[in-house]
Image (cartoon, rainbow, N blue to C red):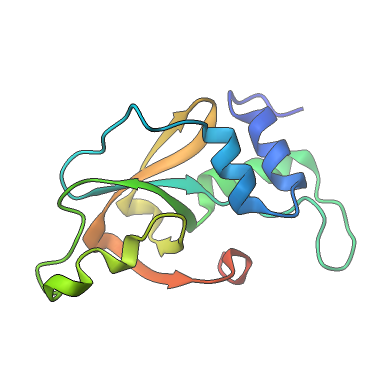
Length: 137
């Protein structure tokens, strides 16, 4: 049994065929929140509990994704979440809402929002966008 506060949400997300929708549902309504400055709020990607080979991962290993996962879903961003190097028409394109992004764990601040594993990361610490979050661990 997972002993962390986000245990039930981790299991929910890991059982979903659509992790993007599962994270959005688990975090809930963020309309009453504002993210500060250049920060980006990410929902932490939790890999599916069933591997592509059909093996069910033990519940204890699911929580490793909360601590070691390097992919997150952009849930919200601050008003200055763009790079000075970007031309105005591309400001913030690396952190578009509901896109998957890759980051270094050391650059992110882990939090739980509504019992869901999330991270805040400065915009310039996003390393790349990916279409499939399962391609990175």
